[in-house]
Length: 373
Image 1 (cartoon, rainbow, N blue to C red):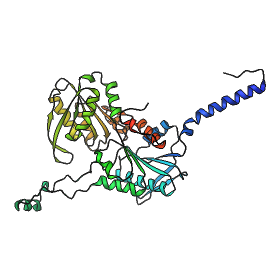
Image 2: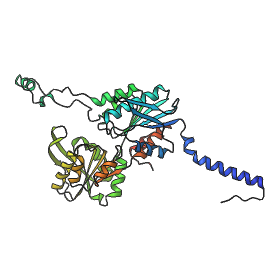
Image 3: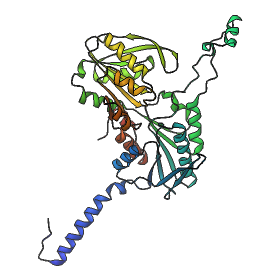
């Protein structure tokens, strides 16, 4: 609406005030968040862009390339001196290359005098290797048999590494001051670090999706595909005020399930399988078949990290799922094209809010039970 005034000086003053207000609105978020830089690795640029869009800032300039011998080279394209730096890199795709790229980016920012460097790792790499739980006695070799014959206690811990601890050490040594991640495979991984770790939960977003997309969710039962996820499903079941069940599984070897026993009554109910991640999807597909055999009317699967490697997509396409719901901690565009059953929950707003609260020195515990809007 044009400014009208009999006094030309007054009119010019009003126009200047209006222009200043407009400029102030455009710079409002920037003025609230000074001295912050967000950079993206190559693993998940879409999520990083969504985070900065939510924050109202621009993505930092960084050039990542590989030499002919496949060494990773990272060049930070702008000054980070005295800045609060956040680097978004997920543990997906070419995990080893992406992890090395993250370490180099952290170190590059640290030696460029960044005041604080926070690694935003939506899906923490090597999280499943968090303890020495493989038994040497399970190896079918001559040495194990010889020890067994001598009546030794041959069920000792094996020589398996604790790789999650190694990754934690590498991040700390590279110069990370803070870690933001989501749904760690085991919460004790936070104890592997001597720096602060904020482990966000997808649970609030999952609850929101269930209430908005499953009309008969009050007649549902939340199911854990293994005993390790019992705590996760009981929390969701309590907040929905529904029952829960779990499936006990035994493995012959990694990524191969031998048998499954259902504990709980799913007859004539909508079964919602909830887990932190799915890789080859053998577990959740077997679990879905077991639930249908036990009388479940529909089966949904909700997973935080949809890795979907190997035969996962073909298994889901051939399985009895109504939908397989994952978050975008890992890029899902290709998976969704190949499998129409896969649906995606956007959790970028949770990471953006965690970044904002961390930068401003606010508590992030609000995000443990609420979805920011």
